[in-house]
Amino acid sequence: MSKLGKVGVGGKNPVRILGILNTSPESFYKKSIKTTKQNISDSVRKMEIDGANFIDVGGMSTAPYLSTIVSEKVEFNRISNAIKIIQNVSNLPISIDTCRANVAKSALDLGVEIINDISGLKYDNKMIEVVSNYNPSLILCAYNSKRVSGNQINVTKNLLKESIDILRKIGYTTNKVVLDPAIGFFRKSGNGPFFTKISSDWYKRDLQIIQNLNLIKTQFPILISVSNKSFVGKLLGKENPSDRLFGSIAAEVISVLNGADIIRTHNVLETKDAIEVASKLSGRNKGL
Image (cartoon, rainbow, N blue to C red; front, side, top):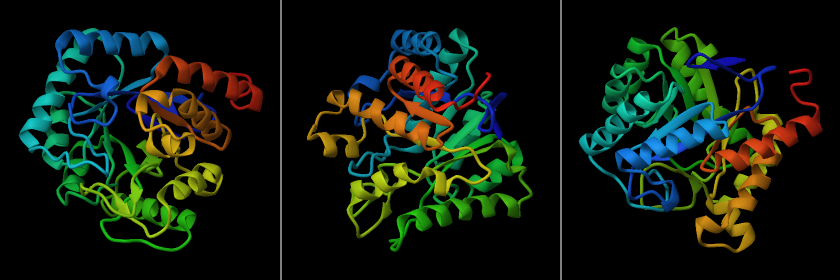
């Protein structure tokens, strides 16, 4: 069991929901993009009413097949604007989706409690210094800047272990860590730096990971982010992310049944209902 901010996750806690708020116009799922004060306020209020436990704010798209790098200044300006708006309309804990140390530090200075680093602390060498100084809650993804090969279950477990080892070297208390096996970020090639290169079929890797979450899960809670992603489109033959809702919900239900503790989603209301039914039918969190 861990905590993200003040919210317990994993163990006997119910499955939690991390609602996605994208402030980057480059993001792959256009419906999730919110850039104006009104849109951000309305979106956050709706996610809270619909059942989100946290809000995850991103200021730069990290889709591996897109060339979407923006400057740190642009990324932080987008994020800081959203943080201030969210803090005025909601008390939900805020997670910042960034792998840049300066952006993370600036967000933590604004009162953010959670950093969601898709590189697992491996992209920016200064990130570990920020973590050491601020001691935030962390979501860490499986990541390697070089090509990896072999059994993808073992590869993913080892990459996540590397991130935990980085934290243990600085004496970080790991009861505030959640691990993410990085669905959608293992690719043969891409236009951006935020993916792990593999030689096998990327979507088959994602399926294998979701089917075997119980083999990846250790003492740390697992977060799964499958909402509207490419493997769903691949399976269904649907190129437009907006057409992937039902496939996303199905993947989220299977993830919960296989041990996921947090679902990161664009579709909070639908995901909430699906999680509740899946949890009750499986007997998970019995008595809560």
